[in-house]
Image (cartoon, rainbow, N blue to C red):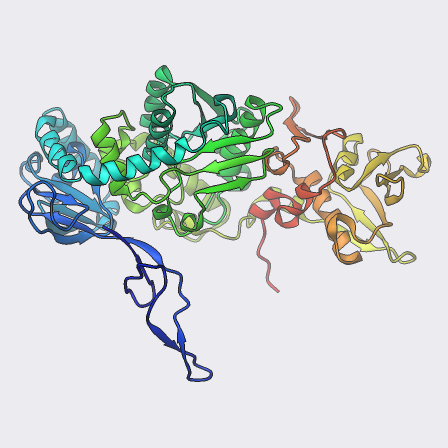
Length: 584
């Protein structure tokens, strides 16, 4: 059952408004509660049918259920075997006929809550985990899926009302876009995970067509089982593969350090940028694109604030639609099991999410499963992390990695040489308040001036050639900037003629905008972040054969909105990642 609840008083709010009163601490007066109601789900356990139900009274047998959880997922036979081994059961197949479900750190075995210590599991030595895997492999071939399927059928029948309710609503919602968009104007964002799998199926059912395009972002870090599922899916559906072919994840980890929870540069480099390029290429000259995504409020705090329909201005006009945004894990699995559609087999092993297998946001259980089922990949990744910890001179590198310290890393540039390129040396001119002298770490080239196109139009004829002088003009021909620096030199003088440069409020802020572009020039590693934020597709970045970076801005496409200057801290995404913490 779902209902609106006040998160402060934990009372039901049918109309979305809490009826409780608070007290104003300053005046002592009673005031109405200002908390915004949130959606809460209550699930029950039917002891007779031995399955979780959405309704308090089981629709299958009429039995009154007991509260079990706010959300829950099925435990497949493969995970049951592993669970039995971890719990020290003599027979790893002992749970074969049991109805087993999971929510966070709890398993429910035939309705009885069993708490497990995932931390204890994950702290086991690799030798112990190897022994567990050997037992697992001996029994996995003996699984009788018919016993599991009998439990699934009871679950489906007991929750058929909920299935019909959420499915009919989602399909009806998607059908609301019929006539507004053609198949050439829409796509499904497909990750190979359960949410995008369900979203895809609902969209195809709503349109009674298999013509809808899917875009899969290949980060090169997917689970092997995700790749297998994507290939199966691709045989029957139209899938475009978005991939950053120019970058190698491990090489970037060496260059700028591995990603962490607060600095997940991998998403920008290997996912967002690649998908943006694919969308731009696949939907040329399209002015209104419809994107179906499997976003759900219950996934995270940040996603709980997403709208069901929103505008994404990064790529022309993209309308992002989330048909299953209010669904829980319970709902998603109810749909998958009821429809019997194909899905990613990683879920059978016990993974609750199947993004990048080495993501810093993965929990201890996911990490443990990777040690069991992906030992070689895990060992290689751990070695890379330990080497990085040594590079940045952590006192106990192995403990730092095994305790998860790398996941919380914030001082991105500490101990990383490339971070030093973020330093911009300059001093104000002694004779002109609006002039600044810089010493660059990279010699000036003809391509250097590309970075100044967002501020205006390049004019190389007006300036003094002997001084290497280049003028930047606005549309009316007024001088915005004057650059003085010879090709091959590292000395640059910038004279700011327009103080509100790129929306700046004063001269100091304007100078900061100049530093943004100088930072890009010195630090660019072709991360594609600038390309991603330009909704006019004016920026093209490419790593050349000699290792240098080509940064081009198309004069005809650039509208001088300066979004590429202002979007990231200090103008550059890599600079943001490699921000060095210095003592005051």
